[in-house]
Length: 84
Image 1 (tube, rainbow, N blue to C red):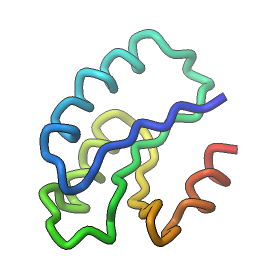
Image 2: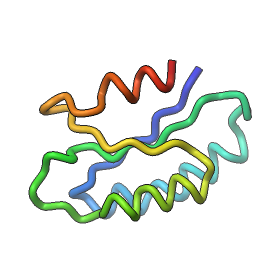
Image 3: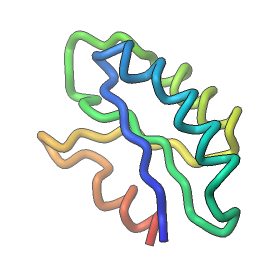
Image 4: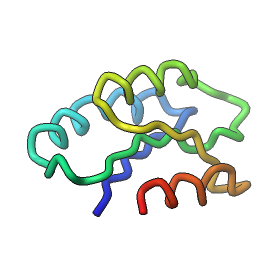
């Protein structure tokens, strides 16, 4: 089982809403569940959330971090392989 929390790197509101979700997961999810934080649209030219900000939030909640692009298939396989 795994939990993949995804936000868009060009949508600050989607990133800001993650903190609440990550707190809920930390409180209620089984500790054995693989959890990852994923910044999607890393190919987008209008980035609003830096790689460092995403990585810092992942570290704060003890989860692995990936930046991916579903559009050009960047890091998609790597992220799913990690979860599997």
